[in-house]
Length: 69
Image 1: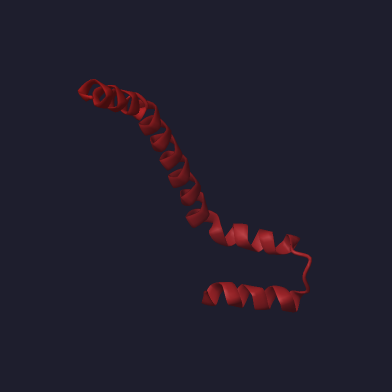
Image 2: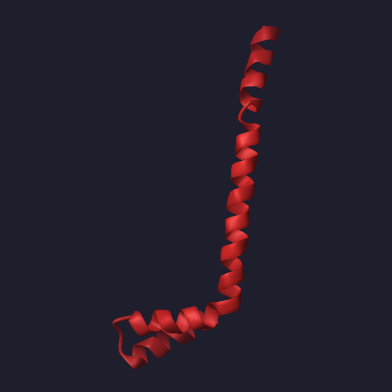
């Protein structure tokens, strides 16, 4: 019984290094993406609105809804 518990524990902790590296990489990519969103967010948003197939009135209304949210 004790051997089974030890085998389970060792098996479960064997993946920790790879999980930690993956977590650090994903966190780094998220921070990098957020940096650019906060830095260039207004430009991204205005360029995105150019591609929307809406009238200017509808774009303005959707913009106001997003800003109020």
